[in-house]
Image (cartoon, rainbow, N blue to C red):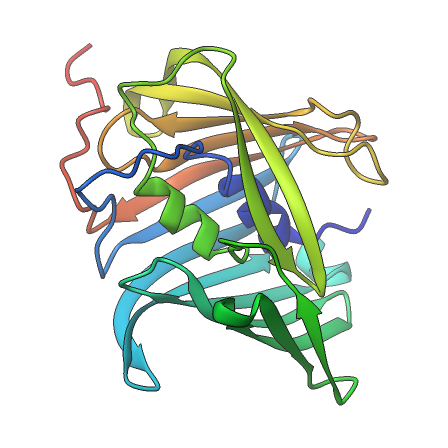
Length: 264
């Protein structure tokens, strides 16, 4: 079965922090933050992924550079080698992406693309370096890319003011297409992790039942209930088997990891 590991991981992670129209004053992340995940198919570890953030500038504009890297591991790496790199450059003032880079190799299937966002024109320019093509596409207002969505939305959700059953929406542009995603807040829950028991917020993204995913509500995501709102665990039922992504390590969080229950 063909898995686009980091694409799968980040596409789901963008739901992990919920959606809210009420922005908070405090930023949920800082430069230097790094999150590492391990991905399992059934009992077998198949891949690992890292999300990191740094401050830089793009054409004189202060931006956050988000870097996502995923690779296959173990036996899978022998017969289906995966090396995925994604980069997003987010305007620190507006919170919207200015540039998105995708360089992936999945079982010999390569992609090398750069997206330049022109939000004032409601358009995005896609440069496909493999095919040597350049095209312009319409994008909706307040559109995010696959990585910027995670970090921008972490700033807007109020972890203490969510209603069970509440549904949230997001505009996303990826691979020359506009996507409308939605997710539902299910409940609060304490879960066991590699770090101990953690208070979490549980979300369910709505994913179309095409090819890989078993049904529309097959994915569940757990997020820390604190100011960091970091994704801790993702579970998805597939057409054949299931896949789980869980946080393996973290460093340089913006706030203390208060969702972690000490000595309980």
